Image (cartoon, rainbow, N blue to C red):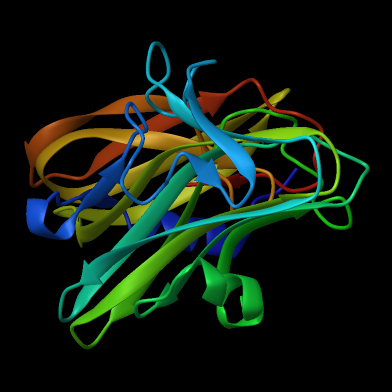
Length: 260
């Protein structure tokens, strides 16, 4: 069991959402959004509530199901303000399937449409993708996927979710969020992970904190898809060195586990 250096670097970039209405796009699929018509390209897309992504409970999610060959793409465009960093996040539930299929959650700067993704997929940056030939589903478990992009100019970004399959299959998508982020006023000193019995102890220290409510502790087995496993209360305002710890007891047997 070990952690990688780049995992530690992720923690030093602690951020929080700065929700500016004019620059934030959020789709929770409680209603069918304007960017998604009643049908994907020949495949029914419906709103269902088998328990949504981060919303969960009674919140609905977008479900795409196929019973025959189809190509399903949806896109949405948001503005990237000058000298800003945008985080794109969304939750997917994709079953394993041995037949031919692809699921792709991707983005591209500029205004584009579904046809562009169909004809030129290599020009898009994939946040996460699944197929029977590569990563085959995520065990049909709601999992969050995130990506960040920085811009030196005032621009736009188009986010797409695509789904193709030549056999009966159902996938779900929820809680799409495109938002500007800004650093938390927390000065980090260190972050370490140590094997402890059958678990892992995470230890970190801060030098200063301003209005710090909490830390979210997240785990990943591939360094891309992170799941929140717990929270640790912050100390609000502090100018003294403070130490924190969290123990992850519910680990599984993977050669590398990432934390942030």
